[in-house]
Image (cartoon, rainbow, N blue to C red; front, side, top):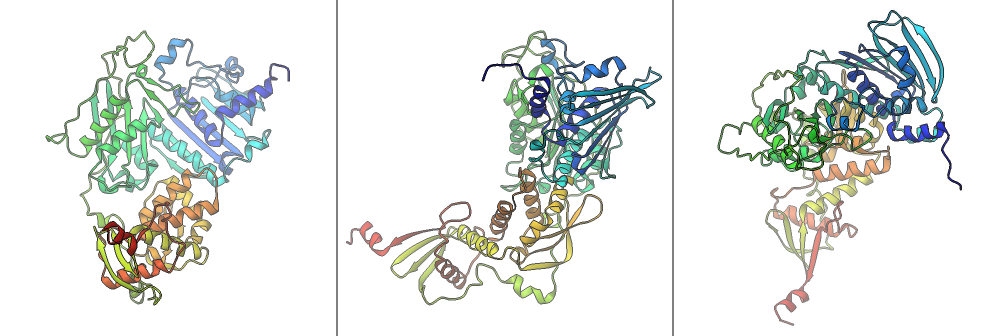
Length: 596
C-alpha cells in the first residue's frame, strides 16, 4: 500500500481514540477546561451514562466568536505557547486536543458568552464538521452539550460498559474534580437527579463531606508536612477506618488528581504496624510543589505523573501521615527528608540534578478539620449481626467441623502445629495440612456448588454499608450477580445501601469488609464478566470464612476436618494455587532414619 496522508476525518478519529475513551473522558476534559477558564461554579449533567447526553455548564470567562472555531482545531490552546511552558504547567489542560477529539465522535453544541459581550454565540459541530455559528442570548460562561457519543464509530461503542457502569465512571471523575477544587461549587446531576453538590467555600472538609459522605469525613484526621518546597495538607483516616482497597486514596498535585505508586507507598508505610495486612489507609491529600519538579505530560489523560525525585515525595507523604497519627511530637518519628533536586528556573528538568527555586507554592485552599469524634473500639465500627434465637445453633457450628465421620479414613492421631498446620497419621502415611488453605478450598467448592441456590441468612438488622458513592453504585448495579453469590444488597436513601442477606457460611464474619472488597473488584473489572466475577466472590468469601491460623481446635474437630479433606480427592490446592497438604509415607520416613 503506498504511503498517503490520511483524510482529515480519519486523522480526527484516530486522535479522538487517544483522548476520548468513554463518556468519563469527555466529562473530565470539559470540566478541566471550565476550571482553567476561571469558573467558580460548574454543573455536570448526564443521561444514559453520558453516552446519550452530557452537559457541562460553567460561569467562567467564556469564548469569543472569533475564537470558537479555532478552539475545535487540533492543538489549538491558550495555555501553552512555547516548549518552555511545558516545564511550568499549572493548568489542568494544555494540549489542545480535547474539543476536536470530542467533536470528531459526537454531536456538539456550544453556548458561550464573555462578560464584556452583549451577545453570546451558539456553535454546532458534528463529526468534526461545522454545521452552524449564530448569535445567542445566554449568561456569561460556557455550556457545552455532547450528544450521541460514538454515533459515527459504532465499533467503539461496543466496548463501553452498561449505562450504570459508565455513569459510575463519570461520577468518579466529577468527585475527584470536586475534591481537587474546594473553592469551586460543583454539582453532579444524573438522570435528572442531583447526586451531590459542593458548597465551593474553599474548605476542603466541606468538599469531602459533600462528595464522600459524613461517615467518611468523620473518620479523618488532619495531615500536613512542609519541607524542601513540598507542602502537603489534607486528611488521612484513623487506623481503625482503614479500607479493604485503595479506592479512597485521593492525591491532588497542584490542583490535579493524580495516580502515583510512590505516593501510595509513602502513605501505607506510615501505617505499617497500625493496621492489619490487607487493609489500606484512605486519604485526601493536597500536594503543592514547584511545577518544574514534576512531569504531568506522561499520559494522555494526564493522571499519571513522574517526579524529579521520587524519594523526596515518598518522604513527604510519609511525614504528613505520621503527623496525623500523632507521632510527630515523639522520638518515634525520625523522618529523614530527602532533599529535592536544585534547579535553575529557566532550565527544563532533565533529571535530579537541576537547581530549585527556594520558594513555596501558595495554598489556594483553607482547611477546617471535621469534628474530632472520640475513638471507638474496633467492634463498634459496624453494627453487630443480630439473628433470631432459633438460628443460633447453626451459627455456632464451625463449617470446618460439620463433617460426617468416614470409616474409610481412620486417623491414628492428629495434632496441631504452630497454630497453622495439622499433622495427622492416616494408615501408613503422615499428612501435613495447611488448615486455612484446605478449609478455604473446601468452602470455595461448597459455595460454587450452591451458586444460584445459595443458603442465605436474613439479618435481623440490615447492615449499613458505609462505602463511597462509586462503590455503592457498583454493588447495586450488580445486584443479580451478588444474589447468585448469596448477598442481598438494597439501596437505602441517597447514595447509600444496606446488606440484608448473606451466605450462611459468612455469618459472624466481617461482612462490611467483604462488601467493600467485592465493590473494589467490580470497579476494577474492565468488563462485566459474570462467571469470572462470581468465581472471585466465591474465592473471597471462602478465604474470609475459612479457619485462620491460631484459631483453636479440638481433637475431634481436627479428625473430622482431616476425614472431610481426604474424602475430597480433588482438593489438593487452595483457590490461590498453594498446596493444602504434603504427604510422607512410612517407608520414606524409615529411609530417612536408615531403617530400610
